[in-house]
Length: 242
Image (cartoon, rainbow, N blue to C red; front, side):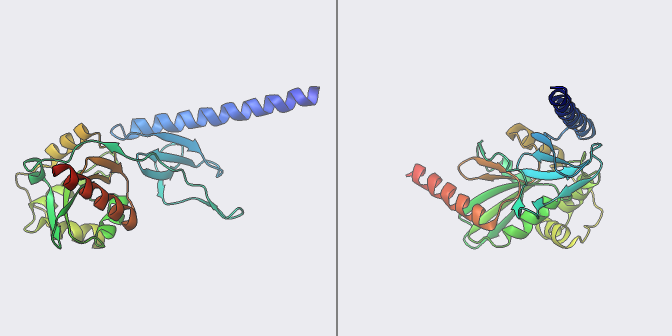
């Protein structure tokens, strides 16, 4: 009986400690990055490491939220990917022509299909998505530069330099794919407007993608997933217009 009570007490104490450490980590993250929404914070099997879900993005951090590791977590004993599966899409609306003037425009092929991306120049997931978008054809890509200064302190100045460059689309790709820094320039720019605009949509992290039918999906997606949703959304808009 005493042994049972002791084991129960140890279990409860362990549970309390885990809960307290998760709460502490969550509080530290919210304090350090007030503009970021943390959907879930959980302890991992690795001591001192916590899994953090931010929209469609998953990362691993310490209790202080100082270090972030982006990628998947595998248990090599069970040969399983134990990374969390984030929640998926929500519905908004596709920006109008006037709003799209504040985005960097790239037309590929016939450009008939359309997609909007909110992207932070210093976001590793955004760089991954930018690489993925190379594989798309017959699409017009509108990229709103959306720096998250709480996570990337120099992102806003980089975004301004990109926008003010002679060829913003090229400057953006050069920086995000090859880390070629744009020249330091100033000009009238929409960066602050983009931040307010994205916040109004409910954009909480980068990258975030809006398809033609208003489907908003946060996080980097595979080429196959983007292609499937892109065509589905385009067909829906075309059929509704008939």
